[in-house]
Amino acid sequence: MKNRRSFLYQIILIVGVVILLNILSGSFFTRMDLTEDKQYTLSDATRDILHDLDETVTVTAYFTEELPAVYTTIKRDFKNLLIEYSQTSRGNVVYEFINPNGDEAVELEAMQSGVQPLLINMREKDQVKQQKAYLGAVLKLGEQTEVIPFVQQSGAMEYALSSAIKKLAVKNKPMVAFLQGHGEPPIRALQQAKEQLDVLYRVVPLTLSDTAHLLAGIHTAVILKPERPYEDWEIEQLESFMASGGKLVLALNRVKGNLQTMQGAVLETGLEQWLSSMGIMLESDFVVDNRCASVGVRQQQGFFSYTTQMPFHYLPRVSDFADHPISKGLENVVFPFVSSLTFTGDSSLVFTPIVMSSSLSGTKPAPLMFDIQQKWTQRDFPLSHVTLGAVITGTIAGNGSTSMVVFGDGDFAVNGEGQQAQQLAPDNVSLLVNSVDWLSDDTGLIALRTKGVTSRPLEEIEEHSKALLKWLNFILPIFMIIVYGLIRRQRRNALRVKRMEEGYVK
Image (cartoon, rainbow, N blue to C red):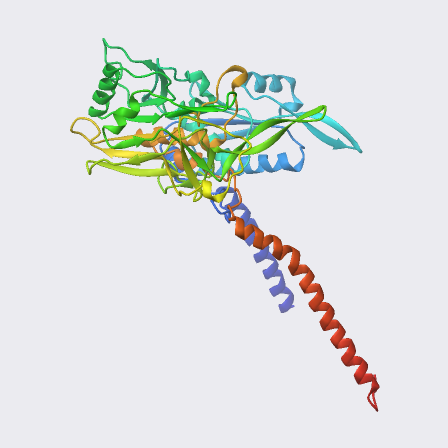
């Protein structure tokens, strides 16, 4: 009887502990994150955004029910993320999940809010059918609304949610000006960069005037890919702007390449002379790199023509970045026809390289002709870690201290317009936007923007190492088979001799 009573008490205790754990789990949410870059841990940037909230943000998540596993995982992760947001913000983030597929009025509401359905293939009773799937969210703060049309997995999920909340909460956005009037691409040709900059800034185009100082009130200015020279009075206005504490991003094409004519030429804008007066030398050369992007080459074989992707070493694919807030977390940026940067100035300026070429790189003086059929060898890449982008701080103009970011290429963050528009790799865009953030003293979204893996290219292997590995792969298996055969033969011979001995018993 005593044992039975003790057993009953144990059962009651276990049930009580389970109930208590369930109650606590509803109030407290935690999980272990074993990923390399802590994809499932809220970044400091997100925590700062949520702690600064003084009004309630309502998140309406439109998610279709009973989807394939890959989409169910997105919903689960998004819900877990919203739970953490709600707890971290002390209840200032509230959310609800709605299935639009079951109600036409709700489905219309989702589409009118900006959440568009995806068509996905689903297998049902050995048949494949298409179904509309909603995987988006609408955020509201007061009368303001932001939309996440499609919730993506991993680090992109947190960035989309945090940047949308930040965009709703931020007030009195500082102005970032993109200078125009010298052949620079219009802002509509920078779709990806503008979308990210709009979170924190009011992005405006600006054409300088010789009758008014239009840079007054601008915190950070960007000069991106000018093609015509700057006048002396314009450079004087830039110096006056920086002397008053303004910050500047310079992304300049010192050379230009034409793949139609296969020619490379020097480009003069007057800004390279201004930089050289400070000891910042933007060289009139093409940086070539063993690690590069490819171009499509049209080839003819008999009556058939086809396009082959061939490495083009004038398009460096950069993965060597300094441990600096602008470049930290970046993994892969392509620079089309980039020039090298060197510094010969005095101690009044601090020159910090943040983007470098690989250990196998070189430079080619302009002008030149491109040879797509050229057989490149290691001798063509005698240099290593050539500076392609740098941060300059110190007395650039006037007597005060300010900062400037300079890149030897102006095309890396330009999408283009119309039929020429192209989607850029996220790191290309992040490099420009991070530069503006850092100069504007707002680094809150930099770490979040580059959170998550964008690419993990294989490390470059030298030619002699490639040859060694190739022969090892060929010879080693044969050698192992021969060794195994010899050992097996010797054992069989030893067993045969043993069997021939007198008195052998198996």
